[in-house]
Image 1 (cartoon, rainbow, N blue to C red):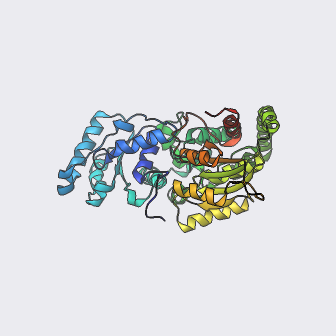
Image 2: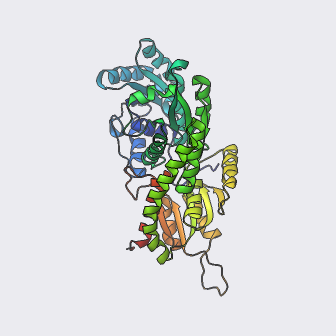
Image 3: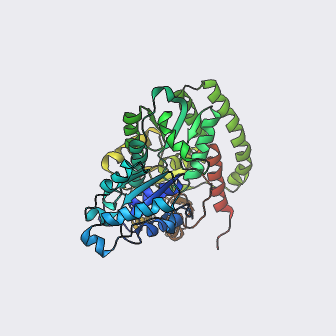
Length: 447
């Protein structure tokens, strides 16, 4: 791991936890760290996730202890106690989560002990440890899940289990900028199979969905990396099995997802095939119209993908198998451990993509690698030119694309050059959205 990352693609663990809580119904954070920390972090993802914005008691409205020099010298436990009392008195929520930052962890504040007094009094307050030295925003997402689902929620009696209820995990709010649209599309397909679905982070969910999580018959983790350890712990605590799979993008990947989802949940294979038939008729009914301009304009490209571990592989497969493009390089931008990289390599090779899988977080290093590995023709008589080139990455790749003379679409965090409301690229509808956005970026004149 490099000692310094220029223009990082995520923030600290606290930011990931705050981003997730800003989308969870009935859950309010109490930030226990230095003054300004919570607001600054909330601002980073509220803008960087396609202008995600802020919700109830998030953004600049976060309850925070805001410790100063006095607490750093004498300890911040009393200040935290005061802040929890005030927050409970003024804010309406089902669950309050005290999330610590670097400063309070460094000085040794015992937040769990302070929170324990409120728990003993029957108050809905828990504590999680989220300093930056425990990981980045993706790690913060998992830490929050552990605190709520594997610590706070009690196991459901066996007679209350609902075999047809599934929980969705692995898509990280804000740091997967399309998380709302993706979750809604996956939930739509699963409901069409006859299942009930907890997405937790979409506007249609309530706190009751969180409470019902231990009753589920299956956890679906839409990530090879994020949420896997959590799902293992969830199984130990609640007895719920889990299924790890890639986020499906486009009809081919989604057909396979639907078939396997039916197998995992005991749904009839005939029901799955009927759903696939119906969805493919709709998908290609739209796609064939757009294919006219796609084919007539000869929109055939070499492609480079730079995205997080959840999106990089599905995007590469989509561009190669659905659009027929020539994949060159796929950059996974998460800061991963060696064993996590090996997991992705194994999954990547099993899908048979042409593009080479690379791991790089630093925007400038990705830019240099693209230029070095895929140079332009500078007048040489014999030159295998990699052109035209299309880069699917973050807003950080916009300049790289311009310098290289390539086309670019922002599909990853940070996405501050587009607004994302309910857009998603998962599933059948998401595949159409991605096709629309790609072709739209090609037909819209520059300048």
